[in-house]
Image (cartoon, rainbow, N blue to C red; front, side, top):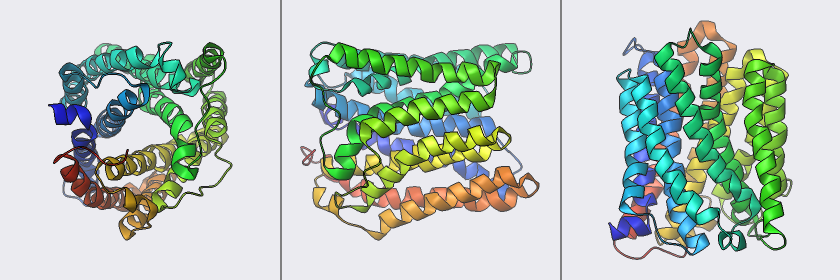
Length: 388
């Protein structure tokens, strides 16, 4: 357990990729005619509440104690964080939608306490910038979204369509977007250019208040989308979340640090606001536009940042400056997945034709990722991690 507390990513990252296989492989099988089961809700659950949750928690459990000089996650924290995504994915596959949300929200509530105790303190304000307040906001948005989805599922989505859409929006978009803003705003300038992240000097309370206000406006965009209009909701989301991320990470500056994965991280940062802006321009094609966010930002960011964590903590920091073919494969395959998944929405008459390569490319990207991460995880398990 001590080894897992020191390097939680060693378990969380591989489990996350296994869950994304659960969420994507059945779509590939459907597209090639091996099964007639088409589970859109399960796919979303496995991808966000399974895959993305595991990658995010593996990073947070590893990064936060080091950055804030606080205690590592407890056995309860790790157990809750690991069980929640796995159990919710299994429950969703079995069709127990309410149970899936209850299991996930219960585990994330424990993680929220872990993060809050280490981030929302006076001492932590000296070590993490104000933009990192988006991380506990993300966890709270996920719990609230899962609760609303559970209520709507229990009553029947047809009976409470607005509640279902609001909960799904907070859960599938709000949860991960806020994580990307909080973590990306803190780390992207370091990862892509080797520059210091946003400063933590000055009036920390004022900085956090400003970020909290922006986060509230971001969360309000989901209410606006459902009850006023999708175009206005997506526009507000792009401007607030994208604006905070771009300004905090200074994304207008291209990557200068060596290493291909750093370019992928930078590209993923820009894909977030651009995907939401595309959805605002044409809400009728929101599915295609949102998959620019889901794959081009969320998945690409998750695989690239987790690769950086694994190689640095797994004793292979020298690989971070390289351009290996497997990282090329991750980028090219996810780009292919974005294009073909967008075509699913743009050309619904030929869903299977586009869905097969979209799913196939995505799964190939995870294979390339795993071929780099697995040796690093094995090395980290034999002793103290690498350079950090």
